[in-house]
Image (cartoon, rainbow, N blue to C red; front, side, top):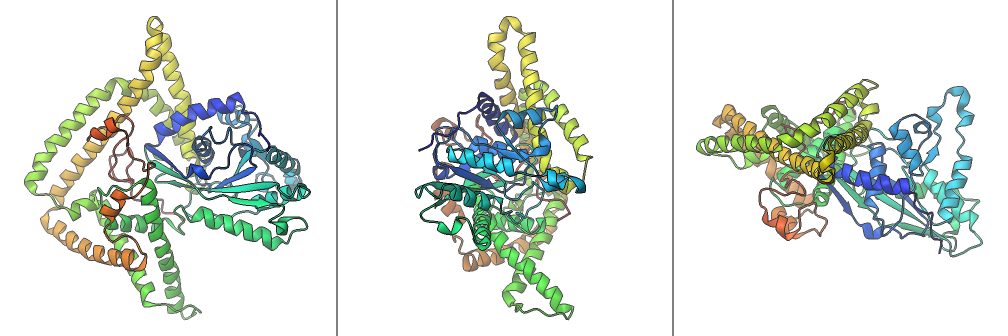
Length: 539
């Protein structure tokens, strides 16, 4: 069996650095099903959805354990190479292969977008036993829908098998991966990386992929890959469908349900699939009302889904307008309880901010640098074309400015450099953890103030509305979608060691604070003073 390429030192450095950077930027990075990854020496194409530019590739590099595969050879658009920037050095030094895209060339230069030599090099790398990362959507974009996949990966599989047709046992695997971001560009949000069962192909068992190949076989393999990737992430036709599905998930499994990140994504995806039908149903309803007519019958179930989605939208609009969570409608607080908690939350906020102040002074240059870089970058194009690269800019500028702060603090304390080299990052991490809990405490303080302002009559009306919505959501979830009847009990017992929760004995005993990560009750939470429930208005 081939041994694969030798891992470059720069790749090891990048994997080491971004393992920390990704876990600083994202509150929780959960990786599922690493046992599906083919081991080093087995030719493999790793394919994932592509919604967050370079961050997607860095996540996959981090997610593939070095004990299973020594490296993951990346690919990137050729326009990222040959520039005097840190990003360009990053992609080049990691052994990344440049791919030329037709849309990056002017009309008279289309013939320059020739990847024949690149494809030949990729196939040679596969024959050596390498794993190559490709994003078959072709480009990254800020949208909830997975684009139709291009056929390049399927054609590479066919070409590699054809090149080795004299070796009937030659095998190549396609490992699909589904990446799900809760809020891809927001600091301390969460991300789920799910590897799917690999698809293996051999010369002996798959003669239909040998040249001359019927192009229907290529399209069928591409469609199969698309199905695998989309089946384990949130793939919605619009942000409104995502918002409605998350609202339904919060009503079905309310705040405090101990769900793993993977369970939460899977439940939300089930609701997304249900509301996709409502999207189609609404289109059919509009076409029917305009007199055009359709071949599909508009059923009563379609009408119920359309109305449920609208009602969830209106309910979430009211919660967002008041700045309160659904849980405060489900479990109302007495006025005296609110008045008792207000000073506690405010005191906790000031106490944690005071603790974190020394470390926040070290964080200040990092925050200012990334804010300035992202602010200028947003001006360079429309939301749909730039927002998918915001996390990339934050990661890279945060890494550079963070290393500069660390190096400067060591230089300024040379007599004690042996201590500050470790104390500085430890202090920055602890201050970040205290800041997270301080922001959460102040967010709770503001929510309590809003509850007093809203008033009992309005809250009572909202509680009645929620009770009616809860009945309809549970009917859909249990009766139609087959979800567990008692989610709070089911998800407490379900899941494995990759739940995204603190699992060690010492930290499990720390009820209110964990050094490793914030104990989130809501996977929708980010480091903000308000709950992030809305999405861009474009689709």
